[in-house]
Length: 330
Image (cartoon, rainbow, N blue to C red; front, side, top):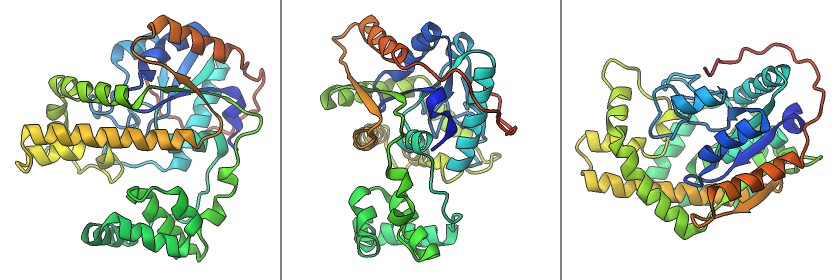
């Protein structure tokens, strides 16, 4: 289990839940600094499509682990945890509290429980499985996983290609199912840290997503992708290219999708992503769910979350940590 679970607060929720706006107000109230818990806001230049905190937000509250990588680069989950640990120490050294904010469930689970590091990535093996999935369908690959690791297959959604491939890769490289290696990862954090998850109804999430996509496009999302994929730039890394919406815009720029087709696909895939996020959150026992709706006044939700975190005091001391270079978020 990571050392910092008892020294930090966590605010999460699916896409379009409204956590970013709440986070700024919470951080100011609670004398906190924000550590981004999002796999895509790590990337410089991927601003609109990842709903990154604005310059104004970052001027109000200091943010960490934002804009730390070029989109051509990738960072492992282990590297993220090391950066996060260093950020926690830095924040605590100033007498403030770390508030992790983001919607990447794997990052949340790793922050709470640690990770199974496993064998390094075999990109040739992954590429073969990706081609197989395109040829025969992701479901057929999921069925292969069920044969070698039924426990992992039972936890991984049939459409979650990335996790299916990683489970197959671990079995290929170690001769043991990933479910055997991950037993510690499945134990909830003890003592239980303060993890608040903002939840809205499926219908409201759908409406907010469908309304948000046109606003993001109007804000210049297509131009953002055009800059990121310019001929004089290195190609997007495998991880960066998986950000929701970017592939669809790239297809539109190449003339393979009309504007309306692109918008519809982004909305559909964002809704699917939101559904997968909620599935993850429902299985993370540490989460305390805060149901809300557009009918609830913002101040009411803010007060409920403030009260929750204030009832979970942070440990007063933290052990020294060997220095680990932490990218500056400012």
